[in-house]
Amino acid sequence: MLGTSAIKAQIWDTAGLERYRAITSAYYRGAVGALLVFDLTKHQTYAVVERWLKELYDHAEATIVVMLVGNKSDLSQAREVPTEEACMFAENNGLLFLETSALDSTNVELAFETVLKEIFAKVSKQRQNSTRANAITLGNAQTEQDSGPGEKKACCINL
Image (cartoon, rainbow, N blue to C red; front, side, top):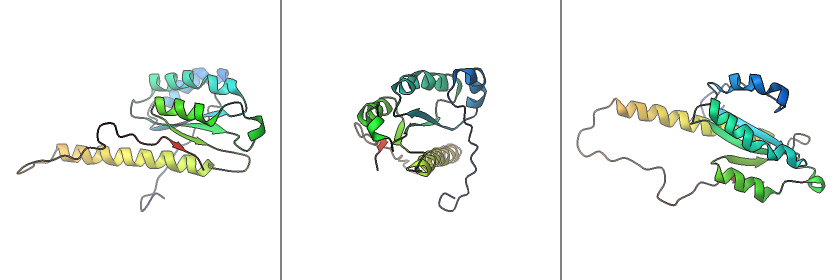
């Protein structure tokens, strides 16, 4: 539930393995959200995120909501990818960012909830805009802008 709205989500785990690469493009079509998960303790998994992101954008809609997720935050002594580096990558690419631990369930639910809220907000706004496009406005029409020039949204959630 998101507020008073029920949300149904289909989750596809492609594991990011090379052997699944041929079938993953089929999953991208029609997708409205994606979590790109990498292992915080293995830099090579982070190094291929850019390639997976490009592939995602090549096959999915341009409006897809994407969150970069660094997993295994519970293994801080084995960390190879600094939070700042991943956060900067996310910010530079317009992605959400969160660190999780699947082992102790830290931020796992929050990752899904955040992506679903962003998708819901985007879909609601698109519906509202399409309704406005079909409406007749009498008098002076004024539109709201999402944000002023130079105003940025935070991409990173560190808890």
